[in-house]
Structures are given as structure tokens and as C-alpha cells.
Image 1 (cartoon, helix red, strand yellow):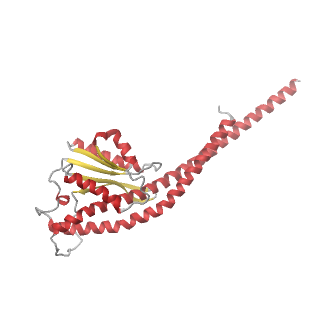
Image 2 (tube, rainbow, N blue to C red):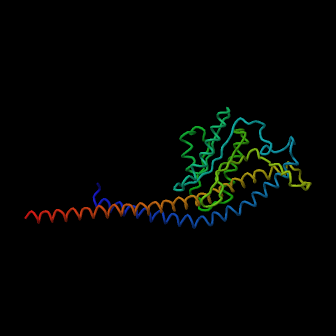
Image 3 (cartoon, helix red, strand yellow):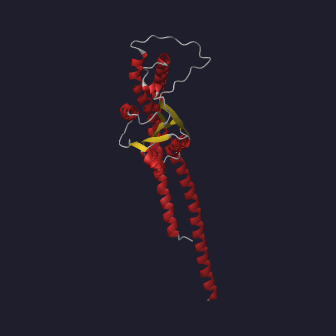
Length: 292
């Protein structure tokens, strides 16, 4: 049985840990507000850009001069998985859930005889994936030194992806990130970004307007598609940022509660042990007095 001194040290250590987790929870809560606002502000722009490109792409569909970012290479042999995770941990299952989705997709593709490559954005995803796919990771980008995410960060990543696509290193690129829903809900998401997937309009959407473009659709898409790719990556980074702080806030809240429960149990054991020792000493004193 541990001594009373050891128990006091353990209780003090647990209280110190509780203070740290509580402070981290408060920091995550303050940063979440700003990150959530940024993620929600980027959604309308990204969705509207998708709609505009879908409209233009429908007019350019089947054209032999359509940009390769839209038409693809005509093959489905090599897949690049662009996996975006956090730079830090202590956020529950946030990082591992994204990695799990990417790993399942990779194993599924490999079982079909496809070649899989990884482009990791974020330290935690890279550390988890390299254990199993070290030789298949072709690039790793860390954003730990970036205090506030900007479009420039996403544009730099998009340029690297496009350069590899133009060099013929892959045929299909899929983006993995966590979509922010709430503090307790972050949804791991896979989105194909090369070649761009154009969703068909709903059956009850009614007739769509017809537009004439100048210059031609292919020329517009050639400039718009790279920007859209960067925008989708930027949106994923912002969604990830909000999801990370939401997951961390929830994880630290649970850790604080667990520390409180542990302190109560440890204090109860300490008091019982102390009472037992006092009782034992009293019995020994009384027994000694009676013997005399």
C-alpha cells in the first residue's frame, strides 16, 4: 500500500494536470470561435465557385481541348491522397479519424491493383501514415509555424499538387480532411479534386440558364480550375482548423472531468488510509496502557 506521502504527491500531481487541461480547454474555446467563423465564411465562396465551374464545365464537356484538371489523364492507375491533419495532438480522435479514412481508401485501391501515393499536410498525419506507407509518401508539408492560415498557404500546396499532375506522377487526387459540424462532431471527408467531379443537377432543380462565354470555356477553365483547386484546399485547411480546436476543447473538457473524478477517489482513499492509521495507533496506545 502506498504511503500517505506518496498519496499526497499523487493528488497534487493530478490537481496540477487538471489545471493544465482546464487552461488548454479555455484556450481552445477562445481559438475555436475565430476558426469556426473563418471556416463558415469560406463555405459560400467555395460552393459558389463549384457552381460556376460546373456551369462552365457542362458547356465544355466532351471538348478535346478541355483542361486536364477537368478531363483527367484518361486513366485511373495512380492515385495521390492529399491527407490534411493537425500539427498537434491532445485532440481526441481528430487526427486518427482522418488518417483512418485515408488508410482505408489506400488499402482498397491497392487491393484493386492501383498505385497509391501520399501527400501529407500536417505533422500528425505524416507520423501515423509513415509507419505503414513510408515509401509511398512523396511530400510532406508542415504548417506549424503559420499563426494564421491564409490563401497563400493553400495556393502553395495546390501548386505542388498541380506540378506533380502535369509531370504525370498521378491520375487522380483525393483530398482528405475533417468537416466541422460542431464542437462534438467533426466528419472525416474525402473529396476528389483532380479530375474535378461535376455533380449533375437535381431532377427537380428546373431548367438552368444558358450562358455565352468570352473567351471560350476552355480558356476560362484553364485559369479558373487551378484557383478552384487552391480554394478547395484552403477550405479544407480552415475546416480542419476549426475541427481541431473543437475536438481539443471537447477532449480537454473530458480530461478535466476525469481528473476531478480521480482527485475525489484519491482523496477518499487518502482519508480512509489516514483514519485507519490513526485508529491503529490509538489501539496500540490503549493496548500498551492496559498491559501496564
